[in-house]
Amino acid sequence: MDKTGKREYGATSLKVSSAGEILAGQPDTQICWMSHGDQVVKAPSGFEVLASTETTPVAAFASSEKKIYGVQWHPEVKHSDFGQNVLENFLHNAAGITPDWNSNNVIAEQVDKIKKQVGSGRVICGLSGGVDSAVAAALVHKAVGDQLVAVFVDHGLLRDGEAEQVERDYVEATGIRLVTVNAEQRFLAALSGVTDPETKRKIIGREFIRAFEEAQADLMKEASSANEEIKFLVQGTLYPDVVESGGGATAGIKSHHNVGGLPEDLKFELVEPLRTLFKDEVREIGRQLGLPEPIVQRQPFPGPGLGIRIVGEVTKERLDLLRKADAIVRSELTAAGLDTEIWQCPVVLLADVRSVGVQGDGRSYGHPIVLRPVSSEDAMTADWTRVPYDLLARISNRITNEVEGVNRVVLDVTSKPPGTIEWE
Image 1 (cartoon, rainbow, N blue to C red):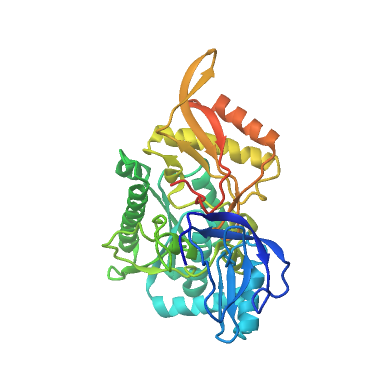
Image 2 (cartoon, helix red, strand yellow; image 1 turned 90 degrees about the vertical axis):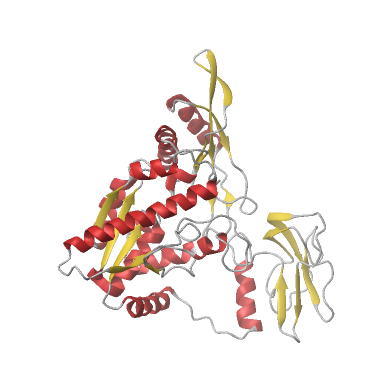
């Protein structure tokens, strides 16, 4: 292994020279998803080279005798054309394992695990409005029923109409009791003057927990038994959250508010039934639990919301500006019938960057807005979505005409890797 100064990120053309057990049944040329700045320059003694790229001479090798196999790319992600086949070949041909995973097994396993962890205790769930926390709450409700109360923290960082939609749709779909905490002023005060993205995420994670603790105290006051403490907090943490926060075998990419952003004096015991799953698996579990498609297919929206889509300080004025731009993008995508085809389209405000423009026959000095349309299934990798030019032009025209303070719209055409889906 050596660092050669050459790197491969994202879509990479791969040539298969020998199939072996793990590349059997695959074409000689295919697209795989890479993310590396080093490479194996020579296979170990007794190993056969199976594949290569223009930059990487040993992109895959194997020793059938030793039952050791290695690939340089990410076979676990959607964007590697035959990645799923690599994993299936390894499990079946090399390891001799029978494929028996399905969502019903996961549900049964997690329901049993939740019952053992919680017992007769009371539980609150941090409901954000996204599919992850919605499925986590539904799973816990299946296990412990009315022992669960969902707490929705309206932190003021939500998209236009998001709070009302969550309160209406989720209660109607599940029957779970929902308590709303209005905490906009609290979050804005805590974020005042903060520009560092890691600090922002940690502040948001801390304030979420403090809001849950206050909700716990209010719920205990109304309980018939004053000694009945709420010890458990449900979170919709997924495996990509854990990985990007430094879990597993990776270095920390960014702290997620529900992983690396949690305060050290956390008083709850966490219940995280989705922690080992990817986004596509969570959606399937949601369907099996009977959640309606509008919830299951809801565009991913991070717990920190628009707070991490403002690059710079978070203020009420900047939030209102970004919220208007985001609403325009969502309405245009819906009108074009692309709201379900595009996995998500974060709208980013470069708050500390100014751009010279001409508006109203005069010079303007406004903020740039970045559009980030992406396709993905599991959030571990993503590619930018090729949105029609006429639609991009219409979105740009509306934003610069209707959102005061913005005079430029740009398009992010970076895959993940090397860029993450969010900017902060």
